[in-house]
Image (cartoon, rainbow, N blue to C red):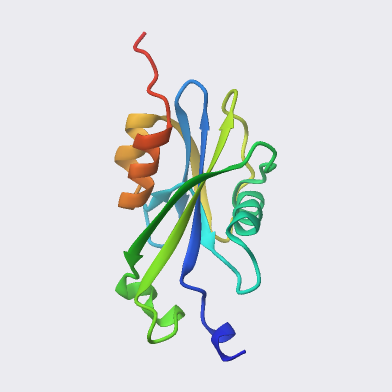
Length: 149
């Protein structure tokens, strides 16, 4: 299939958080200082749920037990630095959201090829740190605010 030389303009965002409102964020190598949740493009032959499970394992080493579809998608323009990865007619990406709530923060095994470090941050701090508006919206919409004190 000719399209397989290009990335599929469809992705997942997997929001990993705790019951008490800490959010897992990962710092990418490139672009420098870009923080995000677990994310990634769908392969041509996989469903959004399959991609979410795969990306979660690849980027964090976490098990997908408890992973659920958020029932939310967002469509956004593909930014110029990444345009060459997609077919010329593909100018927007469709992102599917998934949620994984954990009881407490756990150690993460990063993909050293993609990410330099990780942090568990309070929801408000995580929302301020992530680089994409969709990631910020997902945190603000789904992560419980931690009570002061």
